[in-house]
Length: 276
Image: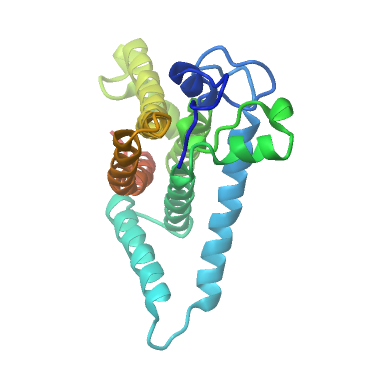
């Protein structure tokens, strides 16, 4: 049973939450939004889940057979068909790169989100037992609960939007659309401002949506963990019941947010294939 604040000289509930919301960073983080630092735990777990996702898809491809598929292959085929169908509906053109990109995004974001199911005190206790808590101090596992992490993903999508706008329309066509759409060339300043705001809004909303949902989910897990600090029948039973219910509900959030991130990426790339 998790008992985060029942020991002597243990932190208060607020100190416990603030501690778990800190990062193992290159310097002290003074706020949730701090783009000037490098959160090494976010980088590590992003790379780890990326490698894990690529290994998972590689293993699935190696295991695929032309005969009657097993349950694992059937599940992977359903996932691939779902992504292919969505990319077909959004992108009218060559999808040789886009469909695998969408599949990679879904698997990667889903794996990063799923790290939220690990016990909130798991790594804090591990680092304490091996004597590294003084060195590492803070450690957060979920990269998508870090705004720096989600903005990194969103900036990657922004680069893809610009790339496909240039690839499909050419430099001249893209610049013409940037300055002339949607009100015509005579309202060039307004068109440029509106298009810049549109690109920025897509990027920011993509990052904030994923971050907000995963940060809130992580915070609720921390609040549920605090119930175990009160060693009463109500606290223990409440932690088990509330933790189980929220974990089941959070499964939907984990995969839904991965699906939404993938779909919005396809929508934004699809818009790059079309003109105003």
